[in-house]
Length: 188
Image (tube, rainbow, N blue to C red):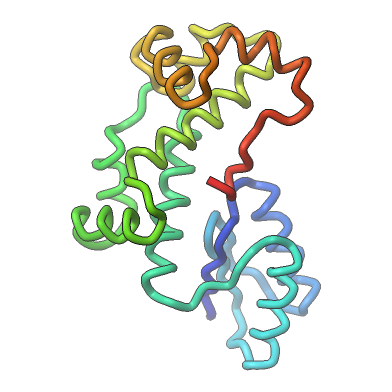
């Protein structure tokens, strides 16, 4: 059994793409989730290099450095946290449960590597989730606030405006005139 750690897996489509890539290379996938895939085989150096190249062509990166792997685990845990609907656990509590090691060290490593705090990264990811939901015409701001775990629509609006410069209502209305006002999650 081999576990590969992969950077830039941010959604179920990424999981599917990586799963398909592994199978195209004759590997039997035991499990795939954001940031990692487990295959039943032990990989040769040549196959590892081929996977690194093919993953790179798809916008992914094969990670081998322990610090990079830990940062990617943190990043994917934050993405998972932002996808929770409704009330959610405190971010630091969630990360303590999902990331091995001391939270203080984990947080410092993330800040040193990514150039921003865990909390700020989580806010950016959460705002991207808000944008996704605002693009659904049947969703109002109160529903979006609840689904993304904000305490109120006012709290959501204040944080959204601070990050984007727009209110959620302005974003929702302007969205039709802006072909691509999104940050892609793997670029955050």
